[in-house]
Image 1 (spheres, rainbow, N blue to C red):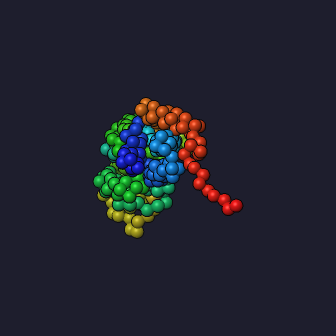
Image 2: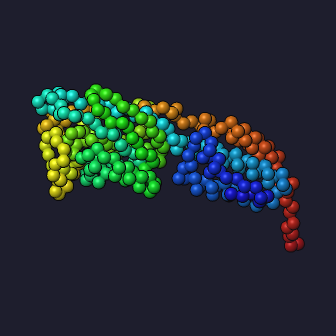
Length: 310
């Protein structure tokens, strides 16, 4: 972006490097606003003092608009705790299978309404591999494709659980453009059973959720046969929809784990989103620009050359 006198002004770079802000998808409109601000003063035909003052005022207004508009996309950080609660009382016979564990919890932040999996939907290859083998490679590839396409924000990975009760944890970032999360972990040893969340929003109105606990029930991915705690069973043909398990070999549909989300970043507000230098520039530009506007009179810069027929 350039001014008439040759100076350049890169607003997206300033926004991206200021107080940890990320450039939002809406920034293109702000570029247009900034460009209009550079052109408008020249149309007044003012002297140089007036042009500079008007531009300072416009830049100040633009800074304020960016702060207000870009604020909600400030990336916030969450702590995610993965708690394993699986015990003998949750299964028929009262004894957990040998080698019981939850594999690595994997998922992503993503657009609302576009989850990695959903109850009643069909499992992708990535979901199938996690549910049957605990393998995350294919799902990580699907997540990366979504990130590249702009429908997901960040992959989330939390260590698995090898004994019960145990809790593992990890942190992740999330922003307003991708405010929901989907996660999955294999329940092992089983044919294709898993726990997780689908399309879970971390927003509460205009704010981020401070804390959230979600109960985890077992699901069947619908890709492998078997009704007991066993591995390497024949494939389910045709593939069936993902479904909540409610019954044998479990006792009902027990809560065998929980996810705990805790917001680590203070809620965004206007003033903290601007660094000290930006506030200084904002104040100075407003003062100079408003000062000129209050003194400016058309008669000082324009002459009336009109003639009338007598």
